[in-house]
Image (cartoon, rainbow over all chains, first blue to last red; front, side, top):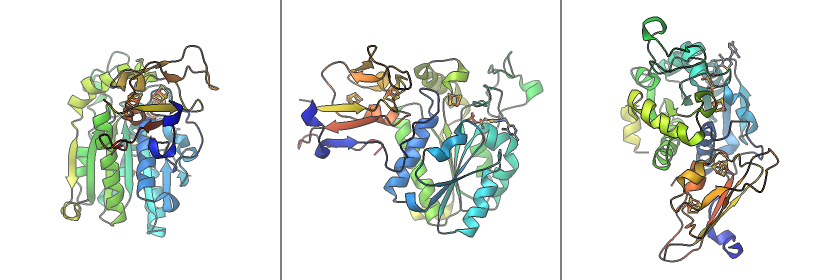
Length: 259
Length: 83
Ligand SMILES: Cc1ncc(C[n+]2csc(CCOP(=O)(O)OP(=O)(O)O)c2C)c(N)n1
Ligand code: SF4
Ligand code: SF4
Ligand code: SF4
Protein backbone atom coordinates (compact mmCIF):
# COMPACT_ATOMS: atom_id res chain seq x y z
CA UNK A 1 0.00 0.00 0.00
CA UNK A 2 2.69 2.45 1.03
CA UNK A 3 4.15 2.59 -2.48
CA UNK A 4 0.82 3.89 -3.74
CA UNK A 5 1.19 6.98 -1.57
CA UNK A 6 3.41 8.95 -3.94
CA UNK A 7 2.69 12.40 -5.37
CA UNK A 8 2.07 11.15 -8.91
CA UNK A 9 -0.76 8.96 -7.63
CA UNK A 10 -2.45 11.76 -5.69
CA UNK A 11 -6.14 12.02 -6.56
CA UNK A 12 -7.48 14.19 -3.76
CA UNK A 13 -6.04 16.18 -0.90
CA UNK A 14 -7.33 18.72 1.61
CA UNK A 15 -7.76 22.09 -0.16
CA UNK A 16 -4.85 24.50 0.32
CA UNK A 17 -7.31 27.36 0.76
CA UNK A 18 -8.18 25.88 4.17
CA UNK A 19 -6.13 26.71 7.23
CA UNK A 20 -4.85 23.80 9.34
CA UNK A 21 -7.56 24.31 11.97
CA UNK A 22 -9.95 21.43 12.62
CA UNK A 23 -13.56 22.65 12.59
CA UNK A 24 -15.82 22.80 15.64
CA UNK A 25 -18.79 21.35 13.75
CA UNK A 26 -20.50 18.25 15.11
CA UNK A 27 -19.34 14.97 13.53
CA UNK A 28 -21.01 14.40 10.17
CA UNK A 29 -22.55 17.89 9.92
CA UNK A 30 -22.65 18.91 6.24
CA UNK A 31 -21.67 22.49 7.09
CA UNK A 32 -18.22 20.93 6.69
CA UNK A 33 -18.98 19.69 3.18
CA UNK A 34 -20.17 23.17 2.19
CA UNK A 35 -16.94 24.66 3.58
CA UNK A 36 -14.87 22.13 1.66
CA UNK A 37 -16.63 22.85 -1.64
CA UNK A 38 -16.11 26.61 -1.22
CA UNK A 39 -12.44 26.01 -0.41
CA UNK A 40 -12.00 23.80 -3.47
CA UNK A 41 -13.64 26.36 -5.76
CA UNK A 42 -11.56 29.26 -4.36
CA UNK A 43 -8.41 27.23 -4.91
CA UNK A 44 -9.37 26.14 -8.43
CA UNK A 45 -10.23 29.72 -9.42
CA UNK A 46 -7.06 30.97 -7.77
CA UNK A 47 -9.07 33.43 -5.67
CA UNK A 48 -7.74 32.76 -2.17
CA UNK A 49 -5.60 35.90 -2.14
CA UNK A 50 -8.38 38.31 -3.04
CA UNK A 51 -11.44 36.85 -1.37
CA UNK A 52 -13.17 38.30 1.67
CA UNK A 53 -15.68 36.10 3.48
CA UNK A 54 -18.41 37.40 5.77
CA UNK A 55 -19.25 35.02 8.62
CA UNK A 56 -22.72 34.84 10.18
CA UNK A 57 -24.03 34.28 13.66
CA UNK A 58 -24.96 30.61 13.91
CA UNK A 59 -22.93 27.43 13.83
CA UNK A 60 -20.72 28.94 11.13
CA UNK A 61 -19.73 31.83 13.42
CA UNK A 62 -16.12 30.60 13.42
CA UNK A 63 -15.90 30.17 9.62
CA UNK A 64 -13.14 32.78 9.63
CA UNK A 65 -10.86 30.32 11.39
CA UNK A 66 -11.09 27.76 8.61
CA UNK A 67 -10.57 29.58 5.30
CA UNK A 68 -7.14 30.92 4.46
CA UNK A 69 -8.71 34.11 3.10
CA UNK A 70 -9.58 37.44 4.66
CA UNK A 71 -12.77 37.32 6.70
CA UNK A 72 -15.01 39.55 8.76
CA UNK A 73 -17.73 38.67 11.27
CA UNK A 74 -21.14 40.26 10.83
CA UNK A 75 -23.83 40.96 13.38
CA UNK A 76 -26.66 38.42 13.24
CA UNK A 77 -28.29 38.49 9.78
CA UNK A 78 -26.35 41.52 8.60
CA UNK A 79 -23.79 39.70 6.43
CA UNK A 80 -25.30 40.85 3.09
CA UNK A 81 -25.17 44.49 4.27
CA UNK A 82 -21.55 44.14 5.37
CA UNK A 83 -20.68 42.36 2.13
CA UNK A 84 -22.32 45.20 0.20
CA UNK A 85 -20.07 47.78 1.84
CA UNK A 86 -16.93 45.72 1.38
CA UNK A 87 -17.68 44.92 -2.26
CA UNK A 88 -18.46 48.53 -3.10
CA UNK A 89 -15.18 49.69 -1.53
CA UNK A 90 -13.12 46.86 -2.98
CA UNK A 91 -14.84 45.94 -6.25
CA UNK A 92 -11.97 43.77 -7.46
CA UNK A 93 -12.22 41.46 -4.47
CA UNK A 94 -14.50 38.45 -4.36
CA UNK A 95 -16.91 38.88 -1.45
CA UNK A 96 -19.11 36.11 -0.16
CA UNK A 97 -21.38 35.58 2.81
CA UNK A 98 -21.97 32.24 4.47
CA UNK A 99 -25.29 32.15 6.32
CA UNK A 100 -27.65 29.74 8.05
CA UNK A 101 -31.42 29.82 7.69
CA UNK A 102 -31.99 31.56 11.02
CA UNK A 103 -29.39 34.18 10.16
CA UNK A 104 -30.53 34.72 6.58
CA UNK A 105 -34.27 34.03 6.58
CA UNK A 106 -35.25 35.22 10.06
CA UNK A 107 -33.36 38.10 11.65
CA UNK A 108 -31.56 38.88 8.37
CA UNK A 109 -34.55 38.72 6.02
CA UNK A 110 -34.46 42.45 5.31
CA UNK A 111 -30.76 42.50 4.45
CA UNK A 112 -30.83 39.55 2.07
CA UNK A 113 -33.93 40.72 0.20
CA UNK A 114 -32.57 44.21 -0.36
CA UNK A 115 -29.07 43.02 -1.29
CA UNK A 116 -30.67 40.81 -3.96
CA UNK A 117 -33.05 43.57 -5.05
CA UNK A 118 -30.13 45.99 -5.46
CA UNK A 119 -28.31 43.39 -7.50
CA UNK A 120 -25.25 43.65 -5.28
CA UNK A 121 -22.40 41.84 -6.95
CA UNK A 122 -21.81 39.45 -4.05
CA UNK A 123 -22.16 35.68 -3.57
CA UNK A 124 -24.29 34.18 -0.81
CA UNK A 125 -23.89 30.60 0.36
CA UNK A 126 -27.09 29.80 2.24
CA UNK A 127 -27.22 26.73 4.49
CA UNK A 128 -30.76 25.45 4.95
CA UNK A 129 -30.81 22.85 7.73
CA UNK A 130 -34.42 23.53 8.76
CA UNK A 131 -33.55 24.74 12.27
CA UNK A 132 -31.40 27.01 14.43
CA UNK A 133 -28.46 24.68 14.99
CA UNK A 134 -26.21 26.74 17.23
CA UNK A 135 -28.76 27.64 19.86
CA UNK A 136 -30.18 24.15 20.32
CA UNK A 137 -32.46 23.26 17.44
CA UNK A 138 -35.26 25.82 17.62
CA UNK A 139 -37.78 26.35 14.83
CA UNK A 140 -36.49 28.38 11.89
CA UNK A 141 -38.44 30.01 9.04
CA UNK A 142 -37.39 26.93 7.03
CA UNK A 143 -38.64 24.32 9.53
CA UNK A 144 -40.98 21.91 7.72
CA UNK A 145 -44.71 21.75 8.55
CA UNK A 146 -45.18 19.23 11.35
CA UNK A 147 -41.44 19.10 12.10
CA UNK A 148 -40.58 18.80 15.78
CA UNK A 149 -38.00 21.23 17.11
CA UNK A 150 -37.19 22.40 20.63
CA UNK A 151 -39.54 25.38 20.17
CA UNK A 152 -42.21 23.41 18.27
CA UNK A 153 -42.27 20.26 20.39
CA UNK A 154 -45.60 19.11 18.94
CA UNK A 155 -44.45 19.77 15.41
CA UNK A 156 -44.65 23.05 13.47
CA UNK A 157 -48.31 24.03 13.32
CA UNK A 158 -48.73 26.19 10.24
CA UNK A 159 -52.00 27.63 11.60
CA UNK A 160 -50.21 29.39 14.44
CA UNK A 161 -46.54 29.35 13.35
CA UNK A 162 -46.93 30.04 9.66
CA UNK A 163 -45.53 28.32 6.62
CA UNK A 164 -41.88 27.74 5.79
CA UNK A 165 -40.22 30.18 3.40
CA UNK A 166 -38.60 28.99 0.19
CA UNK A 167 -35.81 31.55 -0.06
CA UNK A 168 -34.40 30.62 -3.47
CA UNK A 169 -37.81 30.85 -5.13
CA UNK A 170 -38.59 34.10 -3.36
CA UNK A 171 -35.32 35.90 -4.17
CA UNK A 172 -35.52 34.67 -7.76
CA UNK A 173 -38.49 37.00 -8.31
CA UNK A 174 -36.25 40.05 -7.80
CA UNK A 175 -34.86 41.71 -10.91
CA UNK A 176 -31.49 42.28 -9.22
CA UNK A 177 -30.83 38.58 -8.79
CA UNK A 178 -28.43 37.15 -11.37
CA UNK A 179 -28.04 33.54 -10.31
CA UNK A 180 -30.17 31.85 -7.65
CA UNK A 181 -30.23 28.06 -7.31
CA UNK A 182 -30.89 25.30 -4.77
CA UNK A 183 -28.69 22.24 -4.38
CA UNK A 184 -28.27 19.54 -1.72
CA UNK A 185 -25.38 17.92 0.13
CA UNK A 186 -26.90 14.50 0.82
CA UNK A 187 -25.03 12.25 -1.62
CA UNK A 188 -21.96 12.22 -3.88
CA UNK A 189 -23.83 13.15 -7.10
CA UNK A 190 -25.56 16.08 -5.41
CA UNK A 191 -22.35 17.23 -3.73
CA UNK A 192 -20.74 17.40 -7.20
CA UNK A 193 -23.68 19.46 -8.48
CA UNK A 194 -23.46 21.73 -5.45
CA UNK A 195 -19.81 22.38 -6.17
CA UNK A 196 -20.58 23.26 -9.79
CA UNK A 197 -23.20 25.75 -8.63
CA UNK A 198 -20.78 27.35 -6.15
CA UNK A 199 -18.26 27.66 -8.96
CA UNK A 200 -20.86 29.27 -11.21
CA UNK A 201 -21.89 31.69 -8.46
CA UNK A 202 -18.30 32.88 -7.99
CA UNK A 203 -17.87 33.14 -11.78
CA UNK A 204 -21.01 35.31 -11.92
CA UNK A 205 -19.46 37.65 -9.37
CA UNK A 206 -16.07 37.63 -11.12
CA UNK A 207 -17.82 38.69 -14.35
CA UNK A 208 -19.85 41.35 -12.50
CA UNK A 209 -23.18 39.77 -13.47
CA UNK A 210 -24.98 40.59 -10.24
CA UNK A 211 -26.24 38.94 -7.09
CA UNK A 212 -25.67 35.19 -6.78
CA UNK A 213 -26.95 32.76 -4.17
CA UNK A 214 -26.57 29.00 -3.76
CA UNK A 215 -29.01 27.54 -1.23
CA UNK A 216 -27.69 24.25 0.10
CA UNK A 217 -29.89 21.71 1.86
CA UNK A 218 -27.76 20.57 4.77
CA UNK A 219 -28.00 18.29 7.80
CA UNK A 220 -27.99 18.96 11.54
CA UNK A 221 -27.52 15.50 13.06
CA UNK A 222 -27.19 16.81 16.63
CA UNK A 223 -30.50 18.65 16.73
CA UNK A 224 -32.37 16.27 14.44
CA UNK A 225 -31.42 13.53 16.92
CA UNK A 226 -30.22 11.29 14.12
CA UNK A 227 -26.87 9.79 13.19
CA UNK A 228 -25.01 11.57 10.37
CA UNK A 229 -25.93 8.78 7.93
CA UNK A 230 -29.60 8.78 9.02
CA UNK A 231 -29.62 12.57 8.62
CA UNK A 232 -28.72 12.32 4.94
CA UNK A 233 -31.66 9.97 4.42
CA UNK A 234 -33.96 12.27 6.40
CA UNK A 235 -32.92 15.22 4.27
CA UNK A 236 -33.58 13.24 1.11
CA UNK A 237 -36.99 12.00 2.25
CA UNK A 238 -38.33 15.11 3.95
CA UNK A 239 -36.53 18.20 2.70
CA UNK A 240 -36.23 17.41 -1.02
CA UNK A 241 -40.00 17.19 -1.61
CA UNK A 242 -40.57 20.54 0.12
CA UNK A 243 -37.48 22.30 -1.23
CA UNK A 244 -37.10 21.14 -4.84
CA UNK A 245 -33.60 21.42 -6.25
CA UNK A 246 -33.22 23.59 -9.30
CA UNK A 247 -32.14 26.80 -10.98
CA UNK A 248 -34.62 29.48 -9.94
CA UNK A 249 -32.96 32.45 -11.59
CA UNK A 250 -30.39 32.44 -14.32
CA UNK A 251 -30.47 35.98 -15.68
CA UNK A 252 -30.12 36.34 -19.46
CA UNK A 253 -26.61 37.81 -19.06
CA UNK A 254 -25.58 34.82 -16.92
CA UNK A 255 -27.05 32.34 -19.40
CA UNK A 256 -25.28 34.16 -22.25
CA UNK A 257 -21.94 33.94 -20.40
CA UNK A 258 -22.16 30.12 -20.68
CA UNK A 259 -20.17 29.56 -17.50
CA UNK B 1 -8.89 -5.41 -12.85
CA UNK B 2 -10.27 -2.35 -11.05
CA UNK B 3 -7.83 0.44 -10.34
CA UNK B 4 -5.81 0.14 -7.16
CA UNK B 5 -6.03 2.90 -4.65
CA UNK B 6 -5.59 3.75 -1.02
CA UNK B 7 -6.41 6.55 1.39
CA UNK B 8 -4.69 8.32 4.25
CA UNK B 9 -6.86 9.64 7.09
CA UNK B 10 -5.63 12.59 9.14
CA UNK B 11 -6.33 12.03 12.84
CA UNK B 12 -6.38 15.76 13.44
CA UNK B 13 -9.55 16.12 11.38
CA UNK B 14 -11.42 12.78 11.36
CA UNK B 15 -14.44 12.79 13.68
CA UNK B 16 -15.53 9.21 13.08
CA UNK B 17 -18.85 10.31 11.58
CA UNK B 18 -18.97 7.27 9.27
CA UNK B 19 -20.28 9.19 6.25
CA UNK B 20 -17.35 7.83 4.24
CA UNK B 21 -17.97 4.33 5.57
CA UNK B 22 -21.53 4.43 4.23
CA UNK B 23 -20.55 6.00 0.90
CA UNK B 24 -17.54 3.86 -0.05
CA UNK B 25 -18.70 1.76 -3.06
CA UNK B 26 -16.59 -1.38 -2.30
CA UNK B 27 -17.29 -0.98 1.45
CA UNK B 28 -13.68 -1.20 2.58
CA UNK B 29 -13.89 1.35 5.41
CA UNK B 30 -14.69 1.04 9.13
CA UNK B 31 -13.90 2.87 12.33
CA UNK B 32 -10.74 1.77 14.08
CA UNK B 33 -12.06 0.79 17.51
CA UNK B 34 -8.49 0.25 18.77
CA UNK B 35 -7.48 3.88 18.41
CA UNK B 36 -8.62 7.34 19.47
CA UNK B 37 -7.80 10.65 17.79
CA UNK B 38 -6.60 13.66 19.83
CA UNK B 39 -10.23 14.84 19.83
CA UNK B 40 -11.35 11.47 21.19
CA UNK B 41 -12.94 9.95 18.12
CA UNK B 42 -12.34 6.53 16.59
CA UNK B 43 -10.80 7.37 13.21
CA UNK B 44 -11.75 5.61 10.01
CA UNK B 45 -9.37 3.19 8.33
CA UNK B 46 -9.26 0.67 5.46
CA UNK B 47 -10.17 -2.80 6.71
CA UNK B 48 -9.92 -4.85 3.55
CA UNK B 49 -8.58 -5.05 0.02
CA UNK B 50 -10.50 -3.39 -2.77
CA UNK B 51 -10.01 0.38 -2.52
CA UNK B 52 -10.20 1.73 -6.09
CA UNK B 53 -9.09 5.28 -5.31
CA UNK B 54 -12.46 6.62 -6.49
CA UNK B 55 -12.30 9.46 -3.92
CA UNK B 56 -15.98 9.24 -3.02
CA UNK B 57 -14.99 9.03 0.65
CA UNK B 58 -13.15 12.35 0.30
CA UNK B 59 -16.11 13.87 -1.54
CA UNK B 60 -18.52 13.19 1.34
CA UNK B 61 -16.08 13.89 4.22
CA UNK B 62 -17.19 17.05 6.06
CA UNK B 63 -13.78 17.45 7.65
CA UNK B 64 -11.45 17.19 4.67
CA UNK B 65 -9.64 14.45 6.55
CA UNK B 66 -8.94 12.13 3.63
CA UNK B 67 -6.13 12.07 1.07
CA UNK B 68 -6.70 9.69 -1.84
CA UNK B 69 -4.13 7.95 -4.02
CA UNK B 70 -4.75 5.90 -7.13
CA UNK B 71 -2.32 3.91 -9.21
CA UNK B 72 -1.91 5.63 -12.55
CA UNK B 73 -2.65 3.23 -15.38
CA UNK B 74 -3.82 3.99 -18.91
CA UNK B 75 -7.10 2.20 -18.27
CA UNK B 76 -7.87 4.20 -15.15
CA UNK B 77 -6.68 7.80 -15.21
CA UNK B 78 -7.43 9.62 -11.95
CA UNK B 79 -10.61 11.65 -11.80
CA UNK B 80 -10.53 14.54 -9.38
CA UNK B 81 -13.12 14.48 -6.63
CA UNK B 82 -15.95 16.86 -7.19
CA UNK B 83 -14.93 17.05 -10.89
C1 LIG C 1 -29.16 39.59 17.85
C2 LIG C 1 -29.13 38.14 18.20
N1 LIG C 1 -30.28 37.44 18.33
C3 LIG C 1 -30.26 36.13 18.61
C4 LIG C 1 -29.09 35.46 18.79
C5 LIG C 1 -29.11 33.98 19.14
N2 LIG C 1 -28.75 33.14 17.99
C6 LIG C 1 -27.50 32.70 17.80
S1 LIG C 1 -27.33 31.73 16.45
C7 LIG C 1 -28.99 31.86 16.10
C8 LIG C 1 -29.60 31.15 14.94
C9 LIG C 1 -28.70 30.21 14.23
O1 LIG C 1 -29.37 29.46 13.29
P1 LIG C 1 -28.99 29.39 11.78
O2 LIG C 1 -28.76 30.74 11.22
O3 LIG C 1 -30.03 28.56 11.11
O4 LIG C 1 -27.57 28.69 11.71
P2 LIG C 1 -27.11 27.22 12.15
O5 LIG C 1 -26.64 27.38 13.55
O6 LIG C 1 -28.29 26.31 12.00
O7 LIG C 1 -26.02 26.91 11.20
C10 LIG C 1 -29.62 32.66 17.05
C11 LIG C 1 -31.07 32.95 17.03
C12 LIG C 1 -27.89 36.20 18.65
N3 LIG C 1 -26.69 35.62 18.78
N4 LIG C 1 -27.93 37.51 18.35
S1 SF4 D 1 -25.59 21.95 15.82
FE1 SF4 D 1 -26.30 21.13 13.85
S2 SF4 D 1 -25.69 22.65 12.29
FE2 SF4 D 1 -24.54 23.08 14.17
S3 SF4 D 1 -22.57 22.02 13.92
FE3 SF4 D 1 -23.94 20.66 15.08
S4 SF4 D 1 -24.93 19.38 13.54
FE4 SF4 D 1 -24.04 21.15 12.46
S1 SF4 E 1 -11.23 5.92 -2.47
FE1 SF4 E 1 -13.19 4.94 -3.01
S2 SF4 E 1 -12.83 2.77 -2.68
FE2 SF4 E 1 -11.15 3.83 -1.63
S3 SF4 E 1 -11.84 4.07 0.47
FE3 SF4 E 1 -12.45 5.91 -0.62
S4 SF4 E 1 -14.54 5.53 -1.31
FE4 SF4 E 1 -13.66 3.53 -0.75
S1 SF4 F 1 -16.19 11.15 6.59
FE1 SF4 F 1 -14.29 12.13 7.26
S2 SF4 F 1 -14.63 12.69 9.41
FE2 SF4 F 1 -16.23 11.21 8.85
S3 SF4 F 1 -15.37 9.21 9.44
FE3 SF4 F 1 -14.83 9.52 7.30
S4 SF4 F 1 -12.81 10.48 7.35
FE4 SF4 F 1 -13.66 10.65 9.41
